[in-house]
Length: 301
Image 1 (cartoon, rainbow, N blue to C red):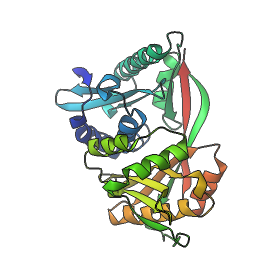
Image 2: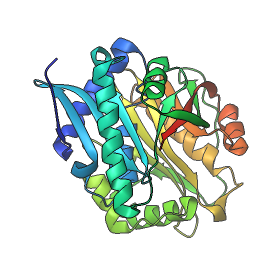
Image 3: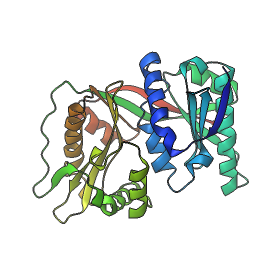
Image 4: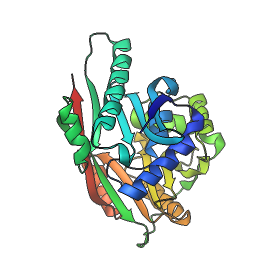
């Protein structure tokens, strides 16, 4: 292979997602996850930072061979490598390049810091072996991954009286920013939310299912990502604002979202959640999700 790499641009997203969908089809989901993670990480997690500085696209001629998202949460990176690139020097080179780029980002914030981290699927023995080979050590279990067959019956979960479950609209940006900030202790602005939506190729506002309170506030939300090639839908993220918890709103938005995914042709729904979050585990189990895997944290430095 004659590999080159360059900075990512927004125009790359459709072809990168198409490439990853094909890798999943050909080699299985282990090592890749879902194509919805790419726009979520680039446009939400790296929000306000230049993606071209922190995301790399690897190419073999006119074919995408890999993608690296660096500097997430300051010190984290992720690398997706094509099946033919895996298990040897090419994948190692991608990992080392992403680790170096992330370390530069870390040290631009704090010159004394030296640690970089990456998460890997527990089933991905190839990546785990290579990370150990280049000096990374496992230090945590992070997320549980759960799936649900969408052909099974989806039980009704009506919203409480006065609440409305509906797709998001373009004029919901301010309310969605507030809801995310309240839910995740974040710092979204309405302008940032609108910008993210505008930069997501093919991602329509109605792919986010929301619960609207009687006073008009966004109380809960579930964002949907669809891989049409592999007929899988991903929830990322799902949240309920603190003032509206224990009302059944997470169940209501997810039930509505699963119906939407099935309408769009998805056969399987996927969600990941902090393995220590027992309330989330109980909710997703009650909705028919079964654990299928986990992610493990590795670090170096």
